[in-house]
Image (cartoon, rainbow, N blue to C red; front, side, top):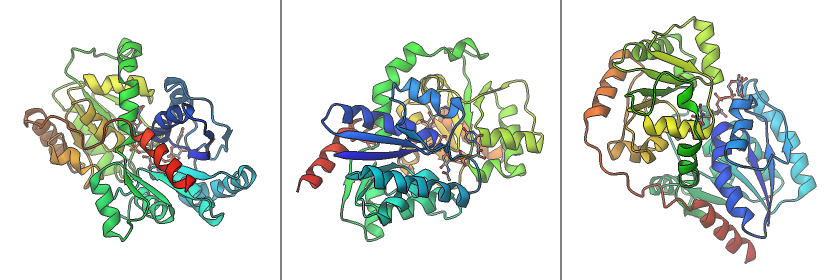
Length: 358
Ligand code: UD1
Ligand code: UDP
């Protein structure tokens, strides 16, 4: 098999790493295209180093811009590359503009699409990701679902063929890199907390929070007045918004540049509580047995809430403080295997082999 994989954004490098490693143990070939959606070294290159991945075969260099210009800008060069390389499968991860661009290009060329992280829904069409994932699922031949709820979502929409529950590939990444993270992290040398300090970790990058002055100001005030220091690796979208709205923080908040995956895993594991609007962090908090407060009205990762590890809060000072209090006092069930066994990549490869050989 020639698998044409398309990645572009930070979480996709993390999802691609376990798959590329598993594929390297087979006779199959991968052609890895980076759309360039994320391009700063600490949003892109650092992940290829941390995850010991080969450099992408091609980087299209298409980052920034509006949704339409970004997505459209990716489709034409992706189509050219697909025509040249004639892959057996186009493989995409998650729900970014890079995911949708690759799915649109492949579908018109009648190349079967494998969608990893299929079936997730927020049922909130104001999120660009919801549009991307619904369309990508519709176009895909293989729908590799991380959870039973994702399978059920697809069934509800009438999609049953090619649907497989494989577990979550981010669990694979956690299995592969968790120990290395603990050994190799140097992040605690450069921040005012150590592994014994009770601190909170914050990330936020969703447009609903960062593109609203009121919401971002409330988040800043909430973490500035929390009962513990806060470490805040700042996404570039968020950095622009903080500058644009002239938002300030108290001294207990340490804003840092985005960090690599290994530092991030270590920051999560040692935090008292994680406050976030990230999809990936909600699950990593769960894997790391760290309680989580999610500043969103809904989540695709409902299992983390159902099992008591995560709660959804509004972007207000009171709600965030109440969420943190609850996170620190509510008994939680031991994380179980709702996200699979950490071998999703091997299952995906086996299913692709089986279908393509018949
Ligand atoms: C994107 C994904 C989102 C995902 C997130 C992961 C879409 C619609 N959104 O959101 O689902 O959760 O990535 O982090 O695909 N920028 C830089 N340097 C970079 C990367 C981005 O300065 O390395 C700037 C861009 O110029 C852009 C802004 O940050 O103006 C947002 O980047 P973009 O990739 O469009 O969206 P994200 O918010 O990162
Ligand atoms: N991450 C990271 N460094 C950071 C912030 C996030 O390595 O400074 C990792 C995080 O551990 C997770 C992934 O990036 O694996 C999540 O990406 P993000 O929150 O940007 O996107 P989402 O998951 O919301 O799509």
